[in-house]
Length: 309
Image (cartoon, rainbow, N blue to C red):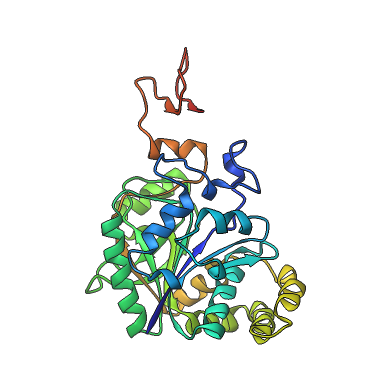
């Protein structure tokens, strides 16, 4: 079975203002000192997916710069442009439709572009296991991060920790909790951080969208029917901006989990979602005053600050 990698990179990165802009969001920045975040994401994906099968979904505004930034790593034809931001259910459904119509069914590995991974080898091994699981089961697979603290910054996955084997049934998804509830989650040992990484067959996720969000599927089907025709771009621009905004978690994952159709692989890989300035301490060490210093900067009478030059 074919394997495809899809990197979601259409966000505006507004929480990293003023460094990030709509034209240059955080995934197009070098925040770690190791290169652009999008290229780090591509390099991680290339550990498990062949170059010709790596796709990036981004906005039309960002697509030209994305093509330049990933030159030699991702084929320009594999950079998919969204005419409008319609949240992850549409982003994922559109990429699944593109793959199914133009390349044939296969397992999709879906990741956001703005993750920091300390132990890439550990993540690669888990993704490999997830791909095999998705090939063998008509079920949705996600990766849950083994939590090291009661974080209020992430959603949580409740899972059956007593189930046999590495692959566990998902019992439910939880929104970002307050500190007390997060502490209870950690103490129970029944929760993982929701990484937003998914593995499943392209045909299966479209079936699930059709079942749980039929209006979204109907619009995606219109776009799919126009693929490989002269009307493809016209239909895409006519239909896409009017699709209902909905996350894949609300649209598919939560109702699927309630029916026992979601599996999770726990992963301990030094993961973090680089969401805003206060997460820069994940990428860089703090000095003795709790400051994060990036670039040619000097801190004078500063404490607990992020200084970036």
